[in-house]
Image (cartoon, rainbow, N blue to C red; front, side):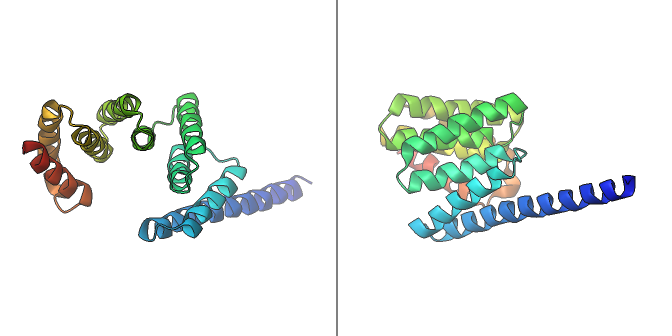
Length: 195
């Protein structure tokens, strides 16, 4: 009886694990396609896989899942739903103390708010993303958030001098990552800010 129960538990776990990982890998595969070719069919596939993955009950990567889902929803012009997803993802992260990718969620929230011309709220979200990434030591996410905030402020002809100083320091600390697109974007923003 015990062996049969244990075997049944293993079989159920295997089936559940397979479903979870299949949905999870499908989500990332569909997001990769969406990143390479941004069109509605790929964005819809991201949404489908994110919802399927969430049905497995796994919240281990919820900030990441929320980021992928919210990016696709925003692309599909479901902006309110994207913002709601972000807020739920941030709350889930706080409840479960899972801060990984939380800074990236805040940065995405800033990008969405900026697209809605909610400039102060966007600025605040970018600053929160920078502070969180810095506190976590997540320099790549910090770089993305600073780039977003500088780009946002340049677009609205606002002060960027303090941010460019912070960006210079960050780039100096990331000297081994010179070829990355975010690094090159940062250099371009520094040149633009200097003009």
